[in-house]
Structure formats: structure tokens, C-alpha cells
Image (cartoon, rainbow, N blue to C red; front, top):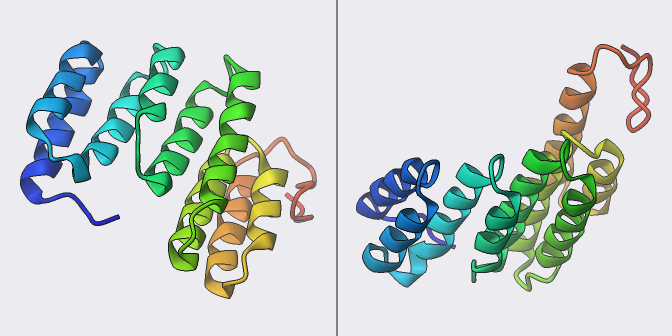
Length: 169
């Protein structure tokens, strides 16, 4: 997926800010003033903006995203936000995000999506992130996931030994 134009990026940013207080208005902005190609990015930003206050709404917005790569990464992002309050829903979103990323036919785009999903979910499911990273064929992609997992292990000072990577803390 190509990056949004500067004008679309600005509109997406405004819609995300508005979404915090008025998600309906933000959706209206996206629908009326952003081209189809940029709507996926806009919806991902809006879902992220409302996830902590309205997980159901965030998930519904994510489901409107047509681009599979953006959909996979947005679902993983919403999962990390809601994991503490709705762990079952978060787990389902993680499974969906990985499945969607793996369904991308272009191997480069699939790898990028899986790296993003793994790096995102490392904050809540280290073992799953490590498994995703191990499944990647591209050494650079694997290294990115391993770095995210190691970083997350280091951010958890209460762990004596990180179960997913074996590093001592």
C-alpha cells in the first residue's frame, strides 16, 4: 500500500484527533474527503484513537479496512490497547491479524505485515511474537522481530528470565 498524500495525511491526522471525542464525525470526514486508497490508513488511525474508550467501535472500524496489510496491523494495534481489559477479544484480534497478514500473496508485503503484527503484539504476547518471527524466511525481518521481543523482555524488570528468549534480567 502506498503512503497517503500529504493532504490525505493531514486529513487523516485531523480525523484521528476528532475521533477521540466524536468518532462519527471522524468517519464522516474520512468518507467524504479522503480517496478510497487512503481510507484504510484513515480508519486504522481512527480505530487506534477510540480503542481505549470503545473497543467494540474500534474493532468495527478495523473491520471496514479493505487493505489486508493495513487491516492486519490495525487489528494488532487495537488488540494491544484492549488486552488488559478484554483479553479474550484481544486474543481473537491477534489471531485475526496474523491470519490476515499470512493471507497477503506478495511475499514482501506479507513479511512487512507479519513483522509489524509481531512487533505490536510483543507487548502482550511475547511467545506468539517470537513464533511469528521464527516463521519468517527473511533474516532481516526475523531480526526485527527478535529485537522487539528482546526489548520487551528488557522492559519487564520483574521477570527473572524471559521465557520467550531465555535472556536473564
